[in-house]
Length: 111
Length: 113
Image (cartoon, rainbow over all chains, first blue to last red; front, side, top):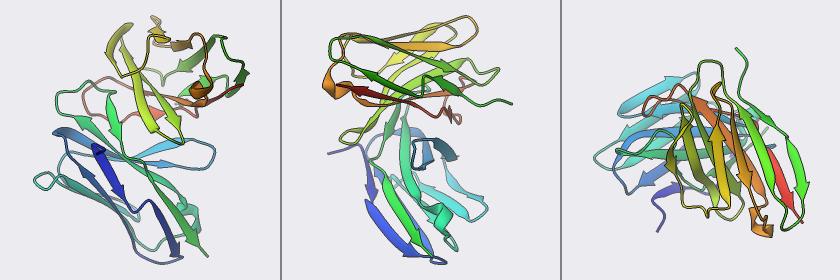
């Protein structure tokens, strides 16, 4: 079993829809990252969370440490949100770079 | 501020050859981490360098190695290339504090024939 599980693997939405991507993990963590990867490979870090909730524009990320679960929400989705969204966790006590990644959720938003 | 840069962007090699990839971090960043991304395994951590020292290493064979220079630029080397080494190699930089945001480069796409 992977230490970081994401669901769904693939998601197709209509423009304007509210989107939720889920991430569950089985290890103790000190931080959780949500990353966005566009076709071509470039990765952008969206959020880094250790507790609670963060919001940036139409994106909201939440984390429940007790339940070992995080969600990424996109409100009023747009075709430019189409990308792969990756959850990554930093193992508690682990070194800075040693992230453990989920397999990613491929989001396609249709106009 | 300039972002993380990686060179080359694309590379084709044959089995048995060796390859060196380069990563220049954001100015002021002392930590550079390397990752391999393949369709089958997804993203996997290779190693992290901080102030010219390898701070952590993932589960990759000894054919994968790296180093960091005094200006924080980093290189990774893969010797005796195998077909399965075909991947996107990404580096990311940060100031080096635990858990902080990393900034990713565009990646080097390596194809081994």
